[in-house]
Length: 349
Image 1 (cartoon, rainbow, N blue to C red):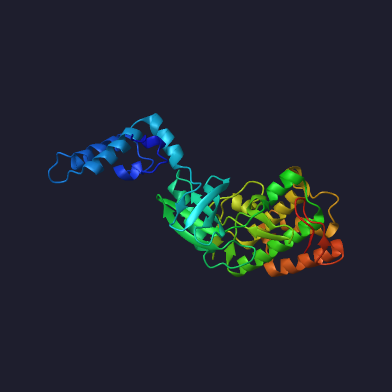
Image 2: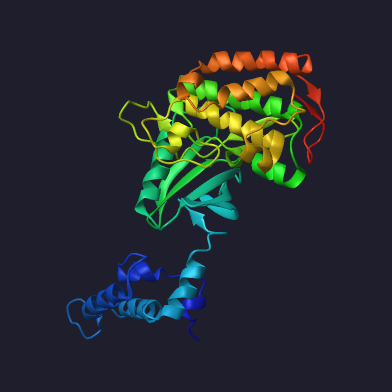
């Protein structure tokens, strides 16, 4: 009994058999089959190959039929359980965005968890963005940043392997449990500023700081991870061009796509992220700090969300030091023992 090529768990790569790209048109698939069938035909005395002929015929039968090809592509696109890059096993999907899909995975020998990011197939530019992300992150080493473990092509798709950061993003935390108390916003802001001090000292501007890109990875220990460096810029020059922006969080100069990213762009995004944590989506859209926010913290936010980037030209370390003073004036001390975030056990900062 022979198995149906469509339902055989995609054991054979039909596109590879016909030597065509997964996005090849039906006319290209048919043309490729005609050439290969002539070459591998069993009655061809010089190049005939019965096994190869059966493989390309099975591939053609599936890919030349629109319905069967759709089923095949769906099965082929399922990554869970696959081993990629020879040593990484894909476990479960974490998230999906415009540029690609992110999965939790593990090293096949150590079983240590990792994060695997696959580029979307729709636009070659996405692959360039992901390679850019890997290049920016390659030599970065900081407790609040993921570490690059591997970069390779999986079925011609750019794939990144990074250290795994469990937990909810700020966006997920607010969506599930509501706005955050100012005292929690304080420690989160402090951790982000520490990461920005390191990045800016390394001449890297993150460029996409927002609630979706900050993972509260160990909330009971008050540890976070800043992720997604797809829009980051390393050693920006006057003629550098930014790659994109996020509505509401990106600075006005970034939205206008004028010139390179600068640290001031990250400061604006931090302020808008603080607004979101304190006031939710309503506070973000209104660009207003909730009345119950301590005055020192409110003034700090207003200071870094001004539209003029020249008014945000601060040294990152000085801004970080200033925020320590904000915490003292707001809560009486720069470090606080406080109740954990909803869903986390009690911890101190």
